[in-house]
Image (tube, rainbow, N blue to C red; front, side, top):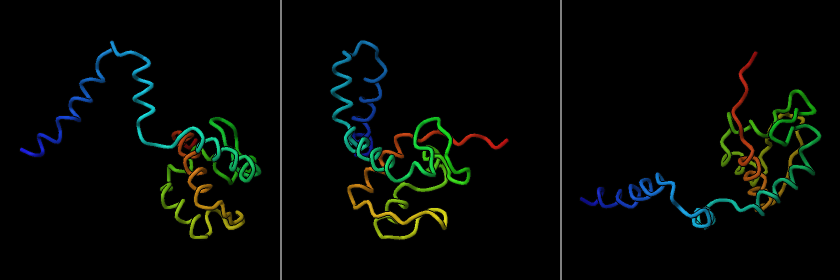
Length: 128
């Protein structure tokens, strides 16, 4: 009986989201209450990425990487786990190609970079 009771709030949420009569202000309030990175953290991550990563990597949604062997940041999590990369950065483990510099962004900076990169992820284009 308990599993059924636990699924009732989820079912109510799913059914409530099917209607179109919801007030837009209410939707914005609900979105603001959802856990996740805030715009400030993503903005901080972008600032760090702009300073440290643009010489090699594309950092936007459609630009090309200056180095052809450096993947656009928008596709790096297709093959890499964000949490594993964050842990490697925090522990000072070398991340990336052999000639990629080692970075120490600190715990908050690392989290901001990871959240920014997560926010721009797209699917990896098919090989031609």
